[in-house]
Length: 570
Image 1: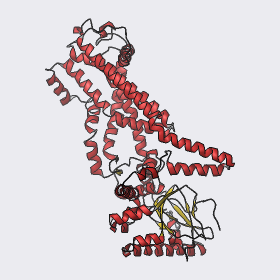
Image 2 (image 1 turned 60 degrees about the vertical axis):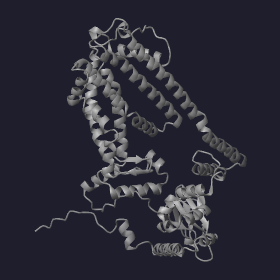
Image 3 (image 1 turned 30 degrees about the vertical axis):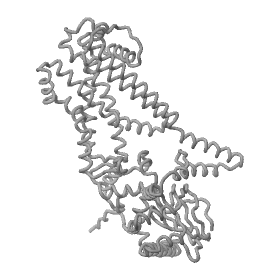
Image 4 (image 1 turned 90 degrees about the vertical axis):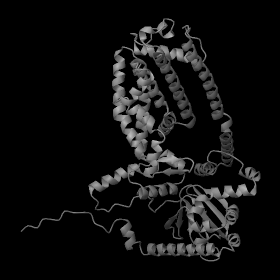
């Protein structure tokens, strides 16, 4: 029987890595399990799919978390996604409200902002600061997720804890921090308070990289295209910079001048009647300051004459920074839309040629979707000439690259690590890598196969001649000769369930390369025989109707649910 489309009859792993609850589990245990499921890896998380592109790797991460972690939240979990939204929202609100609420303007709106900031600070920012002690992080250098409690706590303490503590706890109790600033400014309360506010503002802006990533993740949840997300992020980032400068142009003079009564008449703030202690509306002060900030930042003339040296110095710094930022922004836009997209543009041209080819052949839509999916899985929306790049590298560098590319496969087959690095490099270099799309047939029943295949990442379904699905093969499993009856004739069919990367090599060549390492060949032969026996046992069980005790136990049919014992009348 030849299969055309794969319809999976085996249950996919949906236990989040935790052992299954018995059918008679209490309500409390079920609620506890539901809560823990929120803390573990979410297979639909965008960051999870990007970091672990294959479902098998995602399930393996779920099992690792379930085995090693109790009190730590996984960074790719649903719960962390919710907390990330809360953190980004509260940070953006506080970053806007806190500087404006400390303008020193006698307006009713100021009291409202102070109240809102206190609410956000106490009920949103403080809980998120405590939460950061219990959430794992991604180590970019090691390319792994860290969930060990000691490492998680130490990572937060040496990165953002001090800044979060300053902006979250210090505004509630000035205490020591205010005393330090009083000492620095010779016990001048007015200057000390203003300097403290400026210090808090800068502590807020330390978190900009983290907030940017969180905001990008939020926009991704709404399925906003990549380039649109890029434009939105640049607009928000530019506004935050202008907002900071606007606030500093108002706060810095408060540190320079001793009292608002002593502000010089020549100050542009007095000319605009928005100086500290004025009776202007808060909205008027903010918009007037933002107008001057925009004009100075982008080199446009404004209506006020700046004659004081300190104000000229500040606005000159703003102008210089604005020019540099504008150049950086233009360069980044060119990188995003131009040179950096050369690879993506080549890919799009390749897809355009593929569409023209499929149209000329009159291919049906299902086959077109299959071809487009194959190209996407193979090239991942980028186009490059791998053979041309490899030809420019030395043999040693190519070996290093091959070993790195197959590192996951090597870790999954421990016996390969016993081989000398040179021999292992030759074996990997002789292997061919192929990417199979979901529902793509890898090997058909009855075909002749003289290769041995190794799954680098992905999931493969094994089915027999009667069309019964027997099992799933996953990362580091081998097949091909494994499923052979005699003389290379394939006894079992294999099909990719998800995007699967497979290394394969001719069996005779493989045996020749390892002729001096008989222990490796013996180990693989043993695995081959064991796999063949397992498949035959599964087949026999299916022929009997699949009513063996182990199958019933796995399906939860053996244990009974709790029932109240009936009362016996006397």
